[in-house]
Image 1: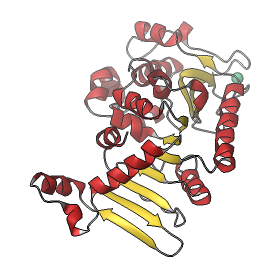
Image 2 (image 1 turned 180 degrees about the vertical axis):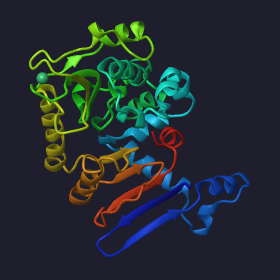
Image 3 (image 1 turned 45 degrees about the vertical axis):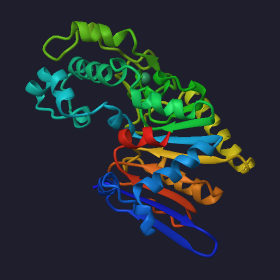
Length: 320
Ligand SMILES: [Zn+2]
């Protein structure tokens, strides 16, 4: 169920504005009742405050997880999955794009046929989704940086400056040695279409199965799933740029700044969720967290936190 809160703390006291049911607020607004006249905070008030902060900011640190792409329409289950994975559903009984990535495909030919389809559906086939474009429209004239666990390249497609993006968990457009024997990744741009064209009975021809050019072993999509994830020079460069951005937050506290966290769940909270709370608390920067499932901000020291538990696709256009 959606709920919105705006927590504000001063040296003397803290206050929390809670709108337990923003939908009910909207309905009452339509009847002409002005909730604010009762002194009660509502979702519209919280939205207005958050919007004002973003509008007035000159610097935005965006943290984005899978919930943003889901809200943008890149869903991992349902009709989009069944429409594209019919033969795989029939053969392996897989039910969604997430759990099927852990399926023990018995041969490399089958594993790559599956991954070519998965990568195409998630990374190559979709255009820049409107929600990502709207996000860029809202921040393009600000000093921004994107920290994301998403591997679908939507930020780059939407036109975000590639030098202002740190995708920590990889990129579906590349592959790496499965054992990470050397720190280099290889583009999949040519291989995936060839695999898709030649897939028969959920398997690619053996001569299309890639092998590590160094150790001769198996290759896999560049996605962090174990200790063998490859961090090449470009990855470390992006990390350095992110660290410089954080350093700037500390060195230039006078620049109005907002932390905007979108769709970051609990799979890997140590990458965005926890650090954003820590940055908000340490540097006294407002944190706006929008999450469909759990928007709670647990760090008590966050001086200004927006917990917007709602659909990002519905909320974000009103914020920017
Ligand atoms: Zn290797």
